[in-house]
Image (cartoon, rainbow over all chains, first blue to last red; front, side):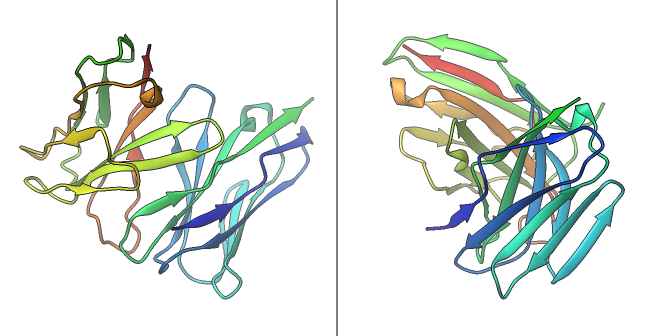
Length: 109
Length: 115
């Protein structure tokens, strides 16, 4: 089976930076996704990495190291609206997505 | 507005009853998926369809069935509901199932409670 680990909860202050780590062990690898999910809502796509390195998209950046089975999502200049769960998902060799349990980020004023 | 719709939004169901969750997308995506989301477990794939007319089993298919008669619709049926099927169900779609950067887009979800 697939194994995707990420911290359960993180708390940070408005305006700060938070880094959410994700480690994975999967049968094959065809890309890693980060999704944002506000309470009671659907997951929405944030970022995609398939090659090693950093992908930057505004206040959000995502990093991938395939050799280490490791990714992180970096949220800069935190805003209250960033309070949500962040889901790490890996596409395996069969092109199926396996999700981590999610990291709940709470932004405090 | 283009996207994915699911119905019903929520449902309370007696154990043993049959229930079909509906999912429709208007993006002409080839691939569709059903997930359940449970606290502490994340999203788990129930069934998927790479294209109209084909379906496949995901990680947790037992107790569920699907059909894909056309591109737009992908209903999920619980033949005889049990309390362990209490969950939030999300339907998703992607343009294809094997593209290098195919992104899955999710519907709003159905909250199902089986008593």
